[in-house]
Structure formats: structure tokens, C-alpha cells
Image (cartoon, rainbow, N blue to C red; front, side, top):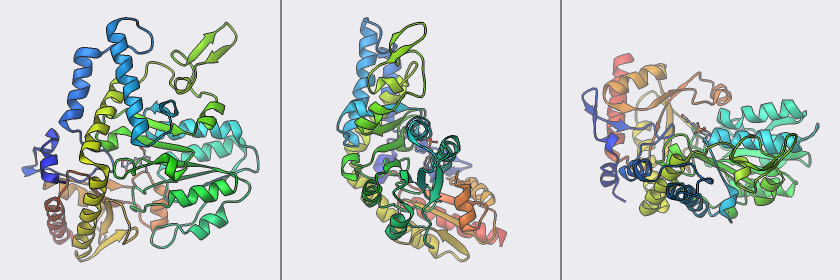
Length: 404
Ligand code: 7TS
């Protein structure tokens, strides 16, 4: 895989910021878009745009084919048994909220337990807090090990016969921890619980097979994998989705409507009320084509190598603290530089054309566990190279000299 050649396919990356060539290292927040995705969305609006599932006119059937074709691509991409198990949403947050407002509130009773971890993004935490409050269920946490991983012994002891839902991120957006989802799924199922997985940080970076993992629900966002903002996916096992009532009501999701009652369309459309995110789905389909051409295994290998390089380069900087596991981690490095505020670190890096994120990363309980109020974070993707990491490391040394 040639990261530099790939970078040339992303028009936005070819610019100067504050007089320096841009180094984009904020990929965990959102990734940039290759020309193929931009062109696919442009072509859709220039040639095929219409509403879906209604018109008999040619544009209507082209738009429907494009939208449903994208659903087929997503199903193959994560190895879902059928495309009707793919629900298009606005993103990971919206997908997890469908499960928490639909499945959880419709099935949980007082005394039931929801089990999550302290490393969850707010999107996979607040919906469960709210579902617990609404149903009388209890929210429980699998504790973190000192290095920011979870142990299977703790998973075993936290999940009980009262646990109905286990929800967990596949990859932490702060620690880079890769959770053992297949093993956790086995433990959840053994106890009669279902497992919900937040795939926001995993789907863009490694090959995901929802059947091999044996997960019950799986959520992810298009914008973190080269697709436009505003499109995401909820995958679910067919029998669970069939049992679940819709959470949004209106046009497009109904079968028959009478004055005082209505019936719903079949899967997946009963969960897609209103005009769907057609252009977004087209963009996601194009992004999947692009990622598959590059090859998920190649992306994974490239990022692992670059992460090791980044861990080595950044660890060598005096006064830096890096959070999360040393080995077996995903392509992001979260850190603090002495007691320089991470916003100051990110601001100085920006003056040298380097984009990183600073803040709590939507993980306030995890910040408390780390005993910090905020951190800086550099996160990589397929277009990043060792040169980008060198620029980051050199700039961090200058930042440290400036402040300390
Ligand atoms: N889950 C995880 C693990 C995430 O990293 C994010 C976004 C979300 C859920 C929410 O995704 P959304 O597309 O619905 O917003 N994470 C980040 C981040 O780390 N910096 O900005 C957004």
C-alpha cells in the first residue's frame, strides 16, 4: 500500500495551512473524502436525483436502485446475512439511540442490567443511562485495567443472569484499546444477554464480520470511513429487528394507515421514516468500493506499522504521557505534554499545519478515570505516512521548548 499515492486521491489534503503542507491527524473525529466519493455524490445529484420508493419515473427508479444498491454493498462489507438487516441512520449516535430507545425500552424491566465500560463514547453511554432511568434497569460497568484494557475475568464476573444488554465499543477513540468482542459476545450469550457493538472506530480500519463476531447489533458512521457526513448504519440480527417496534413514525415507514391505527413496512424500511439519506448512502457505497480496492487488510497492516512508529517517536519526547495500552492498539495516540494544556498543544501544532484534536473526546467518565481534564490526540488513516509522524514529533518538541 502506497500511502503517498493514496493521499493524492484526497483533494483536501493537498493544501497549505498557515504556510505549511497540511498534516491531517484528526481521523478519529472524521476522515477526508477521496475524489471517487466526491464524484459519486456529484454524479448522483447531476444525473439521478429523485425521491426513492415512490416514483414510477426513470429518475425515481435510478435513485431507488442507487440507494438500495448501497445497502447491498454495506451488507457485503460487514458480512451481514441479508441487506434487510442494514438500516441507514444519521450515524453511530443515531444507530445506538435506535437500539436504546427501541429494543432496550421495549424489553427491559426493573432488576434487569445493562453492562457497559468506562471507555465508552458518550454516544454509547447516555442512551443507556436514559434507557435505565426509563425502565428501572441498572447500569453496570466492567472495570478497566491500569493500561486501559478490560479483562475477560471481569467481563465474566460483571455479566450475570440479570444482564439483558452488554454494549461496548470495538475500539476506544481515546485509548486505542481493541476490545475482544467475539469473546465478550460468547459470555453475553451464555448469560442470555444480547451484545451491542459501537463500531465507529473499528469499521473504517479493519475487516469486520458481524457473523463471525456473533454480535446482535452493530453501529457505525460513514464519515469516519471516507463517506459523507450524515450517513451511518445499524446492523441487527433479523429476529431482534423484527421484534422491535419502530422509533420514528411518519412517511416511508408505513404499510397501511387508518384514522386511528397503522401498520409498518417490513425490514429495513420500518426503521427509516421520512425521506432517507439517499446521497449519503450513495457516497457510503462509493467509499466502500474505494476501501475495498485498497483492501482492509492492507489498511490494517499499514496502520499497525505506522502506529508502532508513532508510539516509538512520541514516547521518545521528554515529558510526554501517552494513554492506553502499549501493544495491540489501534491507530491513534492520545497524550499530554507535561502540564501544557492540550488546547495549547493543538493550537501550536495548527500554526505548523498539523491537525490534531484536543479535549475530552466525548468521554468525560474516561477522562476522570485517567485523572485529566483533557488530552491531545493524533489519529491516523490510510493516507498518513511516517513523514506525517515525523512532522508531528518535531513540532511537539518545539511546542515543549516553547512552553516549558
Ligand atoms: N463512538 C465512538 C467510539 C466514537 O469515536 C464516535 C465519534 C462516536 C461513537 C459517535 O459517532 P457519530 O458519527 O455519531 O458522531 N468520535 C469522535 C471523536 O473521537 N472525535 O470526534 C468524534
